[in-house]
Length: 389
Picture 1 (cartoon, rainbow, N blue to C red):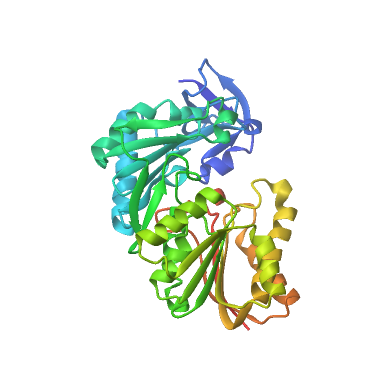
Picture 2: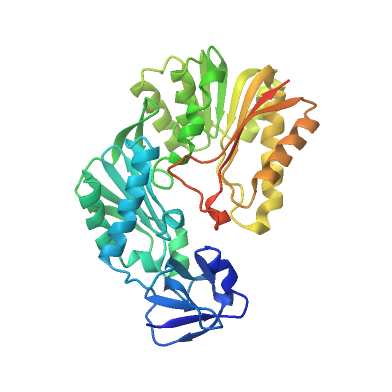
């Protein structure tokens, strides 16, 4: 098998379990290969480190699949997918969950989400995309879904030399899928919604707001399709307002409210959250609970400073319009804003807003999005529940 030999000293990260090998880590490649092929990885001292698929077009040139001398074939994929599914049976509500979380399930660049009896698949790198047909067959055998949809309409695939595309991989079905999370029903647009259609990683965090929203006036910012808002109403809030800049998301949020017979409690509007928070302050509006669950403000290290300003502004403005003793649920899914930095931002927002803030609970992503300790990239979601005075 073709060998990728790492430069001296570059083997440590791989030995410690990180699944990525960058172009600059490789000293030489011995043998012929086609992009997407599996290659053996060796240290400069000729020590076998494992196997992964290679794509010289990508900055992440090799993604590790195994540390063993084992063949990468349908049996290998079956065992990995079955292992991931057995884990979800232990930790997740299987009506809606992430079935495969890429590197954390030792299947780099493969995402599989389950919404009721429908699966949504993303193959985000060339190496895993070559196994897509086999993966679909395995998923049908292991999970037996009513259908499988492909959401590979993401720009990251172009960095791998792959086209953006989406469509049916198995079966034909209505792409507006009804699922349930924590007892709340949602319509998920698996064809045109963001990412795979719904953000499953916040499931446990949405359940965690239950003690704080009873009889409360709640504001859900960056509401998307109403997930936090509907949970708040379901858990007994007296009034819930959801804000999102996407008309498509607001339309779905309103439909989800009707689906749960919560239309009399929940209302949604298309607006810029930054502007609306300022208007609420100017109009002396007050809320008992505010949820901030924005999209990633940065996807690169170079944009972190701008992200810090954005996170600080929304937290500061939210703290100013929370009734004394009320609660702020504030989140960040920006990997490049680590937990310590995020909490520093929140603290600085508290100082500037002249508020006293208590940390009630600090949370991360749901258990069906496990964190691989060797790969800090797999830990990205921060969620802090705070009481504001």
